[in-house]
Amino acid sequence: MIEFKNVNKIYQTPDGEPFPAVKDISLTINEGEFATILGPSGCGKSTSLKMLAGFERPSSGEVLIDGSPIEEPNSKRAVVFQDNNALFEWKTVKENVMFGPLACGKKEVEAEEIAKKNLALVGLLDHSEQYPTQLSGGMQQRVLIARALANNPDILLMDEPFGALDALTKTLLQEKLLEIWEESDVTIYFITHDVEEAVFLGQSIHVMTAHPGSIKQSWENNLSYPRDLELRESEEFRNLKNEVLEAIYEESVTASQQKFAQTI
Image 1 (cartoon, rainbow, N blue to C red):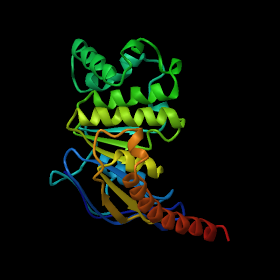
Image 2 (cartoon, one colour; image 1 turned 120 degrees about the vertical axis):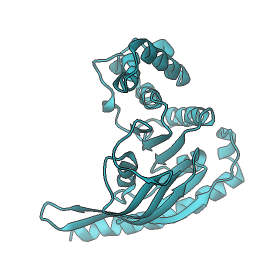
Image 3 (tube, rainbow, N blue to C red; image 1 turned 30 degrees about the vertical axis):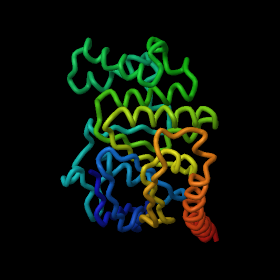
């Protein structure tokens, strides 16, 4: 279980002034849950993910996993970023996915079997000997997911992983990600700017306020799984999407006003 308890994160600006990134976040995500996080640009979504990953420490409050504070990065919390540059261009697809298990002490034969299993899971086993630059953007993103899954994580942290993809590729990868999640016990913390994506994927949906970010509103999403294109056309889906859109629109207006005020 993931818990944010009254979490604040304050950075220092170049001139030494305090800059609050997130303010008083309190949030609970249950084991095995698919949680989607929405908020305007600059509200601290990625900061919250970095604290979960162990890349950052809160200035105050606690970020807990099963009741224990997060002290440092851990292979049981895997991160998938939007940027495909995270792939090693000089390694094959299979070697990219083998990297984590090898780094955790697995023997090469075992690491190769793990890589093949996870590449098959994302539909890329036939491309295992290619290099990342030979793949499309959507295929590269699937390699990143396979690499993240290779260490059998308990938690998958995803920072706008499909944000740069075209609409059709994004839809296909959303459905593939749901298949993977439903077949595993992994908990997913998924950051997105896309309201429809958040509603389509999430068991729970959380909207953050404009900077400094806190949790404005949360929804339990009772739409049934498996989810498909037909679901997106349902009245229940549209109603929930409109509720979430209204909440984030208000915060996006506030964020725009903040940016405008900084320029005058």
